[in-house]
Image (cartoon, rainbow, N blue to C red; front, side, top):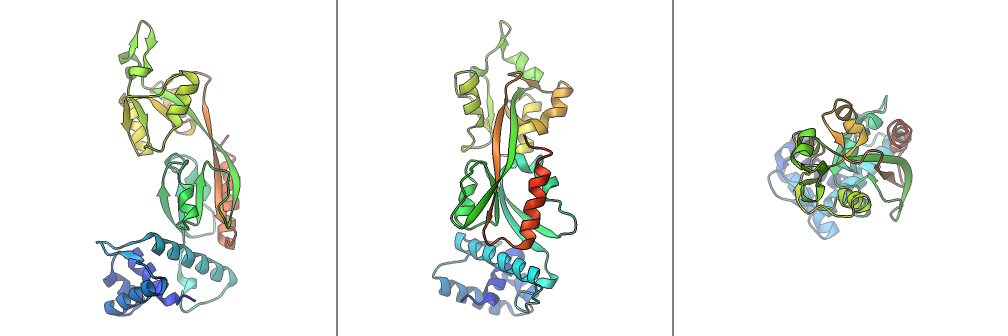
Length: 290
């Protein structure tokens, strides 16, 4: 059985960004913190911290931190005043993998659960690949496009995020010849190398894939680049409704859209606090997702 004093030392080093501050938080010496980290690494047989400045958890270390947060939440729900974990004084941490577009649109409102205090740690990746974080035990919750639950996990459908292909009027004017906008020769905005949204939509509706690409791994940056006329691409309808209404962006394929399904993945050992958060988020998502 893992000594939770060792896990607390790991959590303190990572959250306080160093051994000295971790020692101050735990009211022990810095050398004692180092010994606890070393004992933990000897126990599991691999490093739990990359000793950079600031220190960061390894993949194994992050799995241990996720486990610690599960324990903290379960003990808090049971009313157990553990001296080791001091749950009564903690704001409950939730490490969550999600796609950037959800974080930029509907998700913050869906997480604002009244009467609860959470400290969210968002790990932002494309919805097509973020489930790997759940499989590796690095997160407590994952929002992604896969309906397949991981081993030891469950999944619930949230709804679909609707995307439209848009561009600015200046961009359209620049790439229009003989009253036809030549998108095949125009720059396309793509979130990252895992993002196939633009490719799949264009194959279906224009019979080609983008070749001239700007990589833009920021949801807000994506939107601003679109407004500036840097490129065209797919943006959530939730994010661009005002811009389309005011004419700042133009729908390139009127009446056509792409709906990306989203699922909430969670562990079977879900604490009552995470259950309350999930139920609130699933209900709130109905107001925003298709």
